[in-house]
Amino acid sequence: MKAQLRTSREIFFNLLLAYSVFSGALRIRAADWPQYRGSNHDGISTEVIRTNWAAEAPRQNWKVPMDPGLSSFSVSGGRIFTMVRRPVSGQQDQEFCVAMSADTGQESWASAPLGLADYPDGGVGTDDGPRSTPSIDGDRVYVLTSYLRLYCLNATNGATVWSRDLVTEYGSSVIAWQSAASPLIDGELIFVHGAVANKSLLAFHKTDGTEAWKGQSDVMTQASPVAATIAGVRQIVFFAQSGLVSVAPDTGSVLWRYPFTFSVSTAASPVVGDDTVYCSATYGMGAGAVHITSSGNQLATNQVWRTPGANMNHWATPVFQNGHIYGVYGESSTTLRCVEMATGTEKWRQGGVGLGEVLFVSGHVLVLTDNGYLLLVKPDPAAYTEVARFRALDGSQSSFPGLVRCWNVPAISDGRIYVRSTTEAVCLDVSVPQPVQPLKLDGALSGGSGGFQLRIGNADGSPLDTNRIANIDVFATADLTLGLNSWLKLTNPVVLANGQLRLDDPQSATTPQRFFRVEERP
View 1 (cartoon, one colour):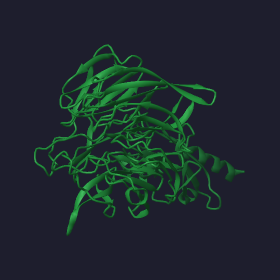
View 2: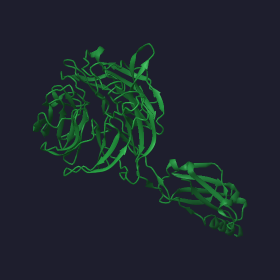
View 3: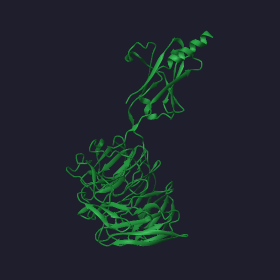
View 4: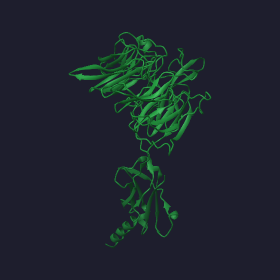
């Protein structure tokens, strides 16, 4: 009985310092950005970011030079992916897909040459390059080159898994200014747009590249297709030279059409909102909106409005929010505008953005101006209200001194904004710090050693985030009169089990009383 009472006393004293709190912050990993304009193909991020840029500017994680390209970033699994133009010894320049560390910007791999990097139709200049953005799905990267070669690459090392050549295999034509469309993944299929009779619209199985279906004679434009559920029906919407063409994803059967006049710069993707689809093209073509309704097994179209020669998007696709479209309008002289989706009525316009790009995040329109500024703008149809402005790119890393040309759409993932121009890139941290759960130190007699097994976990019982483990230290002492600096840091092996760290302390078996504390370094 005396031994049992002593053991109880030991347990009591061991738990005197059971709680230790680190008051800090932890960034929670959020959604990837796996395709052009995000996972839902609509330019809308579901993340919450900091918008108090005037008080606390975005923090630059890294900034690196880039080989030329108009491609945007996709983000998945701790890597970012894009397309560039590079010289090849003894050959004409080629297009490459590159993967970079999302944390450092360091290149992880570059694919083998994917095809000719030649833009003869009055391209953007010496910094011209691939226009298409890679699409990521699990451990695969999908790329459509300017000359219509579709590649599936290994996301770990860039090795080619399979490829299809739309020109050689299907007889597709390469349009002027080459292809700028990005491959679209939805479900188990990947969708691309070609230019040949009866097989312009194509779907392939993403696993092995086998053809799922082909059909229609609607010649491609520079616009990327989108996947959306409209009037309750999942569909793929292509913006062809004939206008909008919507098809069933599994079969390619046409669900509806909306005729629209073609321009050599039909490049902005369709925008979907409230069962209405908006499209636009420059050089006098204007814009239009068509409402889709369902009756039985049929979908019907009704033109809502059409503005020939007005409200033209060059290649920057607008975003839809609360009944309004926010985007960059115009050709050489451009403005940021708010247009009502239901009527086509312009609510306001604001200059100074150039041929920039737009996304939507955390209750704000995110604008990238073509000279490298990021703007946060309130989505308010009553007036233009700029909340914040930050210089993201300034040409300092460009191999073309003084050149800043930001026609590439940003990407948003894990509290970061990834921005590239034709020749450089930057990663900006705008994450919102999340409170860290206090740590709880508990213990019990261990099995055969007679000592203690310490258990460290979150005070609320939730599983411990594995990212915190490396910064957690456990200290022990037998004399509370000593200062904290004299406590011994335990180096015993730790095991993660059931969301808790567990550490055996055999020395407790031979020490009359022993005290413990846990600390977490920032």
